Structures are given as structure tokens and as C-alpha cells.
Length: 224
Image 1 (cartoon, rainbow, N blue to C red):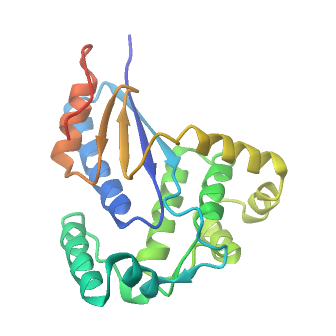
Image 2: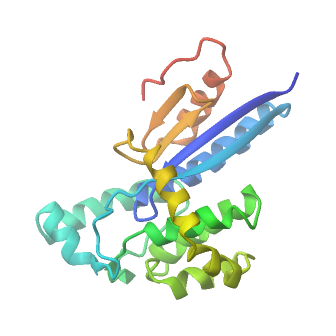
């Protein structure tokens, strides 16, 4: 009988902690596979919009965070905290390049449609490129031309995806999937084998421990 570890990752593309968590999960999976080569791992990426009310054209990035956190000093302190955590995952955020806080709905819909045209590994690469485009290159991932260019870079048929994005069915499916995410208040949020959860960008060792625990028949909610 084959053993499976199913991992659901709830994330948003404007959340730097989600990219950190994605990189830590990748490390944890590599470590887990070395220990358990007989276990099949599946990863499903679940879209979660932290700020669904952001206008489609986006809003000024720096102004948004100064208002949210209380001024430039608070913003600088928070970014230093994030950068320190990011370096443990091999990431150097380029916050100074980001001009706009985008609405991520279109980017998440792109990911949803991409699943029709490529496999899980290709979709995971697309998500990685979207994170990098935003946090490392400072490009607007709320703009359709940018999104289609990234899709093409990731090997997807951009024209076919653009046509699919325009269909009512794709929009309805995406909204239905978002509805199943309504009980989650923060991201990244990991669900292992549908019964054990980890909230936040924890280091690989913590994620590896959760993966190990999820294989046990009596696994319950993880305390972290």
C-alpha cells in the first residue's frame, strides 16, 4: 500500500512571509524525501487574498504601508525584520523597487487557469516566478500583460490562458475555490494530510516535524 503526504499551502502573492514559507517548505520536502523515499508527496497551492478590496489598478506601495504601520520608521523596522527572516531562506527582498500594492485576484486566477495547461511542478514554478517578479523585480503583478509574460516565461501558452481567463466559467470556479478558504485568517497556512496545520513561515525543521507527525494515525493539530 502506497503512503501519501498531501500538503495544501494557502498563500497570497503580496505576502513576503509566503515566499519565505514556500522556500522553507521546499527545503523541508527535500529533507523529508531523503528520509522517506517511499512516501508520495503532493502539494496543492490554495489562493488567499489578504486585501481583496485593493483597486484593480493598485495603490502606492510605500504610502499603503506607512498608513498601515504608522509611518516610515515603523515600515523600516518591519522590513528589517522580514529581510532577516528572508535571508535564512536565501531571499533578498527589493522592497525599494516596488511602486504599487496590487490587487492579486488576476494573478491568482492566472495560477488557477494555468493548472489546466501544465502539471504541478510547472504551476509551482509559475508561482515562484510571480513572487520573484513582485518582490525581487518590483513589477506590477496586477497587470495582465505582465502576468501573461510571466506565464510565457514559465512555458505556458499565454494566448490560451488569456482566452480562458476571459470566460465566465473560469471566474466562477475561482470564486468557488476562494469560498472554501474563508476560514483562514492569515498566510502562509499549511495543511498536512487534511488534519494537521501549521500557520506562519516556520523554519524547515518545524515543517519537517509537522510532515513526520502527519503520517502518524493519531495526528492532531500542530501546536505552532
